[in-house]
Amino acid sequence: MEARINPVLAGLKALIVGIANDQSIAYGCAKAFRTAGADLAVTWLNEKARTHVEPLAIELEAEITAALDVSRSGELETLFETIKKKWGRLDLLVHSIAFAPKADLQGGLLNCSAEGFATAMDISCHSFVRMAKLATPLMTDGGVMFAMSYNGANRVVPNYNVMGPVKAALEAVCRYLAYELGPSGIRVHAISPGALKTRAASGIKDFELLLNEAAHKAPLGELVDIMDVGWACAYLATPFAHRVTGGTIYVDGGANIIA
Ligand SMILES: NC(=O)c1ccc[n+]([C@@H]2O[C@H](COP(=O)([O-])OP(=O)(O)OC[C@H]3O[C@@H](n4cnc5c(N)ncnc54)[C@H](O)[C@@H]3O)[C@@H](O)[C@H]2O)c1
Image (cartoon, rainbow, N blue to C red):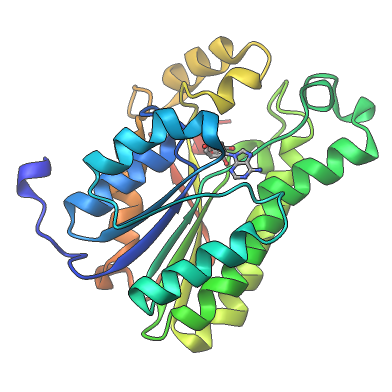
């Protein structure tokens, strides 16, 4: 498959936020974008994460690397300053991060504290609004933004708990950003991958059951992998998708259509 991909994204500048390791959805996006010719900026959460992410950034020939914890004030601004200095512009932005404190995530929505709810919403949802605001002035030739959702936004998925309402908000954020940024030629997509075995997913109770069900339910009969998500985003980043914006795109083998 990779050998047949033309460099349709050649020369485009892409910021990828959310690589923790080579299982991360963000890594699949980065790999697909790079294979299609884009230049990359890649972030890691902190020094501990850097050990795992830096070798991947080197493999991906990332031109910009930086630490980014969206909950630390000033780090996003510093990152976008670096991008502005080095590239002078940005074309693609991938937000592939989520977090909720374990007790608030695993205890059911009724038991989620106000602080836990606010933290989950800030890191997993509002940080995308902040990124979009900083990215917009750099997207001078238009651009494409992606945020990772999950079908727990629209259907009750047992054990997904507080992340359900948070992802519902994220999908609404994508619609409103698509509305506000459409006149600037910027498209915004919520991507809804099927269940994937990643580090973030390991925080969901009984995740193995979800994985089994996802494969069983999907009309295409298999679990998706991170490259399936990456290639879908790469397609949406091309001019072939230039009239597509604001929606939630499922990359789940069709599982979402089954009752
Ligand atoms: N794995 C799945 O089944 C699945 C399905 C649908 C959607 N998603 C979504 O995909 C996205 C990526 O998750 P993943 O499954 O690849 O797991 P992952 O653990 O590989 O990625 C999660 C990323 O979030 C980052 N992160 C957490 N707090 C942060 C903060 N304060 N600042 C900056 N980054 C922070 C982590 O460093 C990590 O890189 C998430 O939004 C997740 O909800 C995952």
